[in-house]
Image (cartoon, rainbow, N blue to C red; front, side):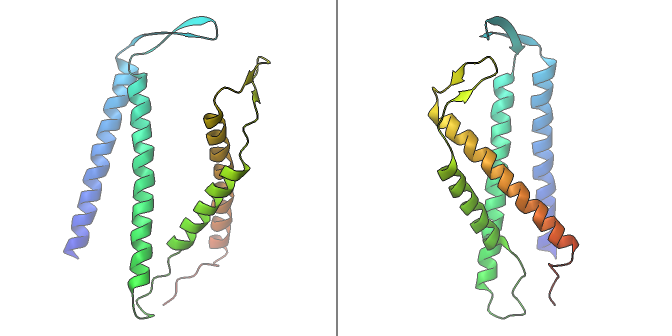
Length: 165
């Protein structure tokens, strides 16, 4: 029980630190001012001073989120495999979720297209094939995983997933 309280305390500290760092980055982004001059779509524009810092921080948070979800999910799946008796087995679906996610991402990659994209001004965007593929993979994955989340929520509301005792 004491070990569990230490884990909860550590989680609260980690969440608090991430929240404070996020608040500092947002205050720097919105509060410091504008100073970066850029040329975009034929116009001179002025961007906030710490736009790059905000983008890097958001990438770091997304990466941390992905790593923690994958890490804790794999730990839970391996703990479930190591249990010997049926009464110790957990009713987790971590392995199935990872398999489903991997299949969705792999299928999205093979379904992605490198065809040029027609922009709003009538021009086509075809110079960066990697970003075109990555955009398609992200969009297809988000659609499929959102559909899976909605389906899981509906099945859960119908009491399909009952806890076994």
